[in-house]
Image (cartoon, rainbow, N blue to C red; front, side, top):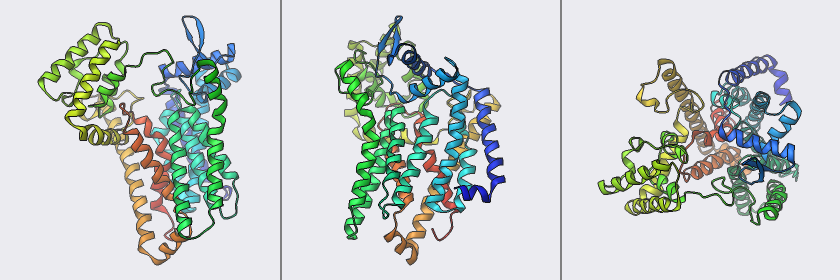
Amino acid sequence: MRELLRKSPRFFAITAVIALALRLLFVFTSPHITDDSRIYADIAKNWLGHGIYGITDSGQVVPTYIRLPGYPAFLATTFALLGEDNFRAVLLLQVLFDLGTCFVVTDLARRMLGNRTACAAFLLTALCPFLANYTGAALTETLEVFFTALALDFATIGSRELDAGRLLPWLWCGLAIFANISLRPDGGLLLAAIGLYLLLLLVRAVRAHQPRFRLFAAGVVLTVFALGPFVPWTIRNWRVFHRFQPLTSRYANGPDDFVPLGFNHWVKTWMADYVSVEEIYWQEPGAKIDPQDLPNRAFDSLEQKQETLEAINWYNETTEIDAELDTQFEALAKQRVEHSRLRYYVWLPLLRIADMWLRPRTELLPPDPRWWLLEDDVKWMALSLGFGAINLAYIVMAILGVVSVARARRGSTQGRLASAKTPTYLGLLVIFLLLRSAFLGTLENPEPRYTLECYPAVIVCATALFREKSV
């Protein structure tokens, strides 16, 4: 990487300055301190001020496990060094992390596809407006993207050095995955993807009668350092709450919090896009739900529509869901699943995955989430269409890049021989993208930010279009 920087210092310097300016633009013009940000900050301040990892409830600090300690630790460190509630410093530090992501993704592309792709990777990462946008939000995404790229880079280094018996890269890969999971539990998908990749290499080694111990040792080291650091957290939760809680609960709820599982199940039987997340899912609890916002796919019959509207009206009276009302939503959910299991288990998950990947990614910005109606102000319509086109361009380039590598390896004798001897490193990225997308399809709330962690992989796949033909 240092040699590459020495060869093209002007390109990297100018692009880095543009990347910095783009990120600072979002930090200073559209900073976002959300309800989640305040929860993280509350935990961080209680950790600093009282030595308790907890939230403030009625003036009392109550221990909690509703958030993993990664982002609160980042906030606590920032607040301790640069001032309590100094969110501006938090966002500026996130800018530095995201600039670091640019260099890590560049190194990842260089190792996987050769030096020719590295400059393209740096440019695509530096100018990516979606990565830049989230540096201005006090949320986990920017750090998650950084540690995702770092883990993939170390996994590539480790794969290349398996023949030499070096396991240190797998140690660092495990720690990067640990950092990712400590920010949000779905970071565990990265461990699953890399573990599956190692398993495939092991199967190939068995078929080729090649040494297998190093692959097994790499998997052990990776797992120990990715999950081992959670042992103190798990012990703490067992001692404080008397529960085996190695991560967080599915809905980030405390041990005594009521979770409207019936409502969530009902939502999952029809929700397919982010608009419904904003208009319906996030309204509960505390805000009324407009029945007019329900799409037609939320009803299978006039009778069911009437039952659904009655449940919504019942909710709107208190803007809370109790056990009785939740039971009613669960009954509706079961009716809908019985009516069409294919819709519930196949079509809706596919629609949610498509929505998370293909939306313009303006959820942190003013444009109307119903961008396709073209009823917004002209400047916001232009922003939505522009972001949508950019997002689509990244995805199409990534698909074409993967296809081009697959064709090249399949179409030449030299490529077939090479693929028999060396790992298909790009396959690691494809496994990660497919595994994460499949998981996201199981969620009832399709939020575009959940695919943001995939962008290091997307960008590297896209740079395959610029690779040396011998790769």
